[in-house]
Image (cartoon, rainbow, N blue to C red; front, side, top):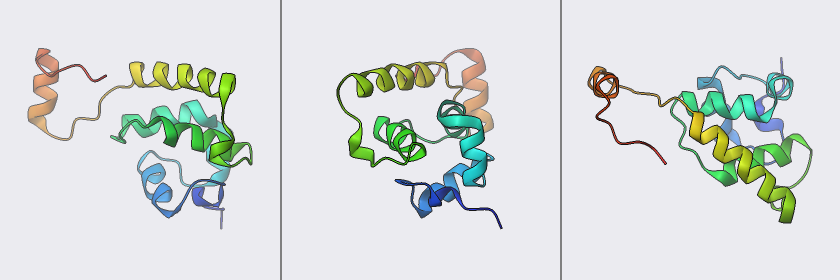
Length: 110
């Protein structure tokens, strides 16, 4: 059996469920696609964007504690996160939301 996503440092049991919804069911798969592609998949499946969740995953993939991210490295990760968030396609859960989005009446996400 493959190691779960939660076997990666900084990622807990709740991560297994949210990553599985995004089609990422093992630590190996997460490592293969990398943090940016993985986070884009999470956002596409409705996960709320949180910077700490993003950089915790990045640090975990490097085998580092989440709070090891500081200074220029953290600023660079913030730019990557903001770019991912800006290009994320919202996951609409209802036909009404999809139609409202098609019509362009839903507020833009920040």
